[in-house]
Every structure is written in C-alpha cells, then in structure tokens.
Image 1 (cartoon, helix red, strand yellow):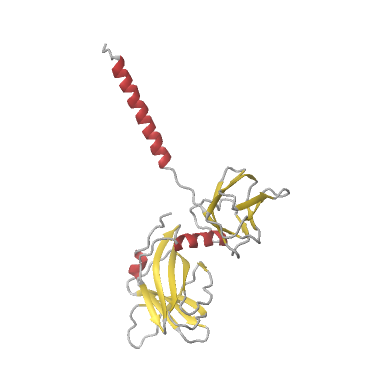
Image 2 (cartoon, rainbow, N blue to C red; image 1 turned 180 degrees about the vertical axis):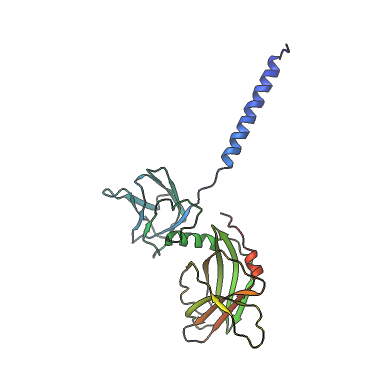
Length: 276
C-alpha cells in the first residue's frame, strides 16, 4: 500500500479545488448573453410596456427614469423620464414566467413607439419576429451601430447613395444605407424600389427585372440641404447568381433627381454577423 504524505494530500486537494473552480468559470462564461432592447422615453409622455405575464420586479438603472406597474393590470409597466436629456441608462423587468427583460433607455422628446407589446416567446429570442414592429425597430437600431465595412456608392445631381454594410441575423439580411444631400435643395423621396436584374443584357432582348420586397423598411423622410440620413432595410435571406444584380432605386417627388445603385453578388457574400 502506498502512503501519501499530508503535504502531498494538501497539494492534491488544492489542485482539485482549482480545477473545479476553473470548470465552473468556463461554464459561467459559456452562457449566452441576453440582448438588451432599445427604449426611448419622454418627459411629457408616458410609454406603456405590455408583457404577456404579470410583472414581479422592476429595477431602474438610475433616478432619471420612473415607472409604475398598473394596479388593475399587472402586465403593464408605465415608464417616463424624470428629467429631460438624461444620459443613457438601463432598466430590467422580471415577469412571473421567469423571463428577464433588459432595456437600454435613452431620452427622446417624441418617441416613435408609445405602446409596446411583448407577445409570448418573442423577447430574448434569436428567431426573427417579423410581426412585431418593436422587435424590428430594435434590430434595425442595433444594425446601425455596427461597424461599416462596405462602400458601394452612386452619385447623381449632388446626391450620393451608399451601401455601408450588410449583416445577417436569424435568416434576415440587414442592409445599412447612407443617403447624403450635397446640394442646398431639400430632397424629398417619392418611392424606393428594389429589384433584381440581369448584369448584362444582350442586344434585342427585353430587360428582365423581378421586384424584391423588404420585410422591414421605415420611411426615409426629407433630407435637408447639406444633410444626410442612415436607413436600414431588411430582406429575407437570399443570394444572387453571377449574372444578376440587386438594384436600389430612389426617385425624388418632383421626378427630378434619380439614384440607381447596383449591388453585385459578391457584396451579399460579404455579409457579417452582428457583434451583439
């Protein structure tokens, strides 16, 4: 029988403890991070968050935002700003079904969404919820914050349209565009049309075009003289053959300035996964 000294036993036990702590730390750091949703609140208006289950706890990141659970409807949380133009803070909501809802909260005098509903299984789910406009808006804002790595551009009459990045998430392709007005005359978009066409057209043949409809795109609105605007468009995932191009066409209301931006198949293959 081999005898082990007390010193060796101590070293052996310490090694087991260190290894155990290392395995625990690996397990902790391998967990999936819960995404935080972007929320805009106002000082003069109340934003209503409607959950699928009763709210059991709310934690405000700072005193700059205030909130209350509606007494007769404990699935509704009302939130507003305690002061104007506060720095970004966060908010956490825990519901009775054990779900953790995380928000990054910023100030806006006129929030786009005032009544936001969270259907069952739509929060903290990586699958796209194309029926939930709040989910789509949140994803679009996250894409706009990602790194820009493309520069496919076209110019016409002091207007410039650029494709700055393409990201893929949950089977959805997110295109991040930049529209810049280099003139002093306001630009009022009339329509935005996306279609796929042949890269080269043989002589005496008709132009082959097929419209492709985005699953998400907010109106751009007018762009003042010298101004610019980022805008995000989402499509169901697709690819292009070598002889086809995706075309983005934007026309001005008066029928004046027309921008036509062709996007080749190689650009789509450069799509990246968002960093968060």
